[in-house]
Length: 179
Image (cartoon, rainbow, N blue to C red; front, top):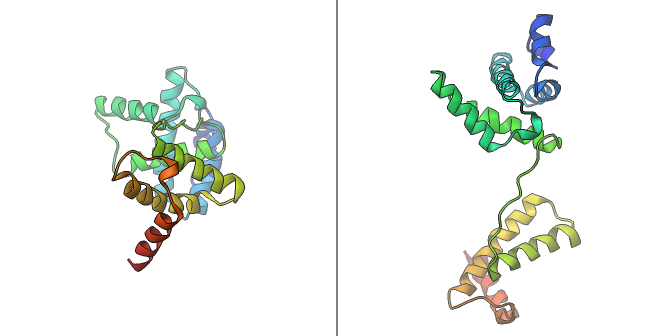
């Protein structure tokens, strides 16, 4: 779909080369669907072509693209007198998210704290996703309130699941509902 933004066949061909070449059309299509202007999309795609060439020179592939590599790319550009422009970091992150959604780039494994509060949060999130089948946005909304409740319960000492009583939860919900 780079042909939506570039007319000359040689220009289009250049976007299909390199580490990211096979993903350019899909990302260009996404830009079109999201309503980006032709010129703005062209600027984004030129930046990604430069990233692809940078990856090639280092012998890296699409699987190596992550936040750290994008930061390296930005630093290298700055050292060469071409710092990223306003919006370019967002473009790189947008593209990384696109690669991760398609399974081309690995999703980072979050490092999770091991305290009792975090274990309860994770267990509740797993329950909501697996047993109740809720989407990520709903789970995140629920977890926001759960974190408030657990912070309230932890204020008086270390958290133990045996310390959580139905009346405590009920009182918390009523107090939050009034606000």
